[in-house]
Length: 243
Length: 182
Image (tube, helix red, strand yellow):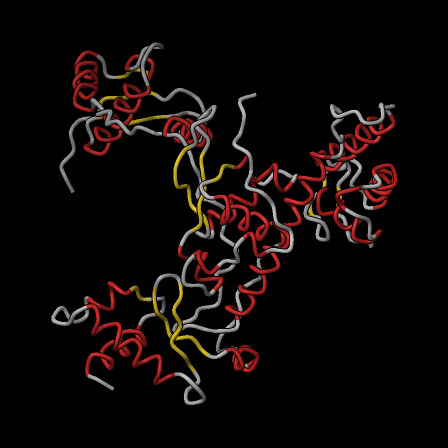
């Protein structure tokens, strides 16, 4: 009567093959003892039931425990003294016996169904396909709001893209040329700092530098630098003939 | 065989499920009910006896060609067909209770079996062997279940009348007393 009972640490019974319930186990014990179901030796059966559920590791399953408690209560009620010929006395076993008989009837029908299904299973119809494997997990049920919230959480993980905006900053080479030409008119020699002040922007500096190079190329002026990294001097040149 | 019998034979051959009398009769609107019955009897007779490997079976309120039982093992071994999985004892108990007490609610099934039957009922619903037929009167208007044509099909019976009668069982019980309000 050993049966593999799979239990996890909480004592929860995952699967039970041999008995389909406490009534089934009780019927099994009654049949084993060959006792009259309508005149149950309740004390003996109760003890056997308790021992059986302990052996089978079922002593934490609610359905079996409930039956154990019921058996013990009936056992106690049977011990109460009663007067002879008391018509009022109701057999405490009556309800249990009724349920057992009812269950026995169901078991008998189960045997019939099992035989019928077994016979039918041996006759194949056309286009018989092997039974589908166990149904997959039911489709995910999700609320629209939950879905949107999940999408937001995922979107929040995406880093903000680094955008580099390229803007045109036109160099004012013409303006710088005009300023340099004005200086050349006034003086024959002047310094770089005369063209760009200390507060000049990068654009102003670049504009002035390009303008100087261009004017030097044209021969309007010459650039002189005494030593590396020293300020250079701008001198007026007389216009040359183009080569 | 008569032309109508041959037509019905073709339909029954092509179908992979039991065909109802109405479906078979609709194949030729010009013939009457009796002609269809006669034709079915003609086919059944043609396939009866030790002549063919298949036979015409009346099943789940319809007719279907099924292979003869004696070939089950050979066909299965050759992977031509496979026996469906057996139902668990819990499923059979639940089916028996629902078949005989229908329409019946979960609580009554639980009480007769002495264990919670919710999961088993869900499985049977999923397999289409039972269905919700109505709602009960009591508190919460519980769902009441009944059996379906596929239930008859897996048992190979024509209708519920082929189930054994309760008074034929060795354990005879009086019908359940009507539920009293608690």
